[in-house]
Length: 81
Image (cartoon, rainbow, N blue to C red):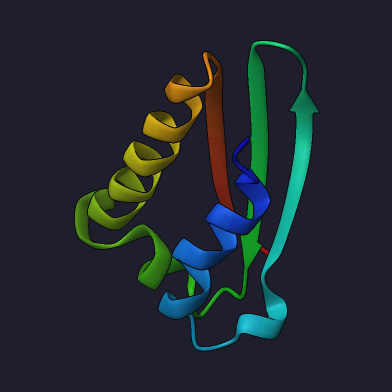
């Protein structure tokens, strides 16, 4: 079973300048759907989202692949603190 909080942390923490400000929260976890919220320092928001959302899209693609392997759907929100 995949630990999605650890996976999200391993994808996001190397990107940010303020790793101590990263908060990963599971908003919903039922049999089929998972919903996570990531809050980062406002100075790191651009680093995590990337130009035209390219980095955020890549992070979500990895999460979707892991979730689909377990027969689940996942949603990720990225916000600033």
